[in-house]
Each structure stands twice: as structure tokens, then as C-alpha cells.
Length: 67
Image (cartoon, rainbow, N blue to C red; front, top):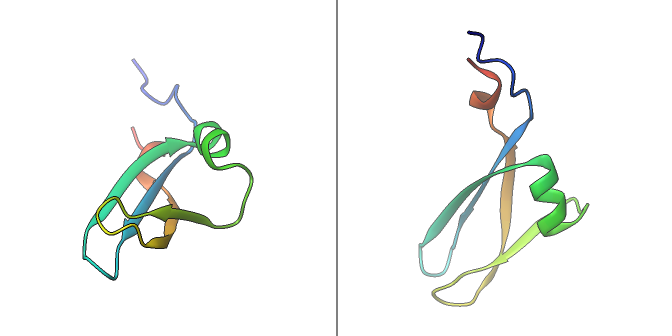
């Protein structure tokens, strides 16, 4: 069977807090991303440890298109 049936793009969201050093990572589809954060060019997240607001990096997950 061909496993290329799911061709939806996935995006990887990564953060790293410059103040306390914690970080996070999530993977979402384009629909999930728009539903949660809206159609904005930048995503700002709050650190769960020190409450600092930081920018998140959003990149297309290259592995999502591989079989």
C-alpha cells in the first residue's frame, strides 16, 4: 500500500526562553495552526516557568511529505 495518502502539510513550532532556558516543541497541521493562533505572521508564546513572552519559530515539517 502507498502511504502517501496523507499529503497535509505539518508545521513544527519551537520556542526557547532566553531568560530561564526552557523550551518547547509542537507539531500542527495548517488548519490547527490557524484555528489556535489565527492568520498572523508571528506567534508569541508565554514561558510556563518565568512568564516571559517570546517569539516562536514556525517551520514546515519536511518529514510530513515523506513516505
